[in-house]
Image 1 (cartoon, one colour):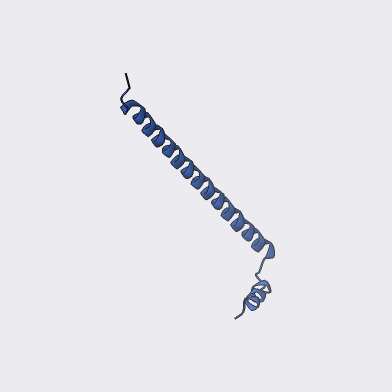
Image 2 (cartoon, helix red, strand yellow):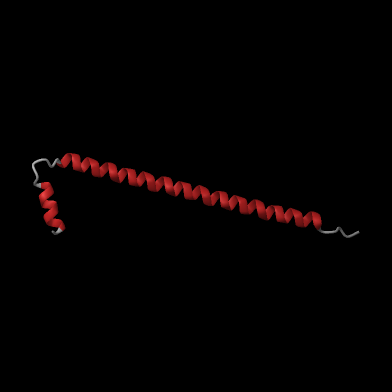
Length: 73
């Protein structure tokens, strides 16, 4: 059965409610967009934490280098 045939069967059925279907689709789309935004924010936060940790690691190495070098007299 083709998609167009299936669509016609659904939309011509006596129990088909177009408004309900449109509302359901809208809810599904909004939920997907919200989930994608949350995933984006979570990944952004993860990358920011990773960046901050790397900055701290480099700063720590720099400070260790300053304290471990003998001072010339």
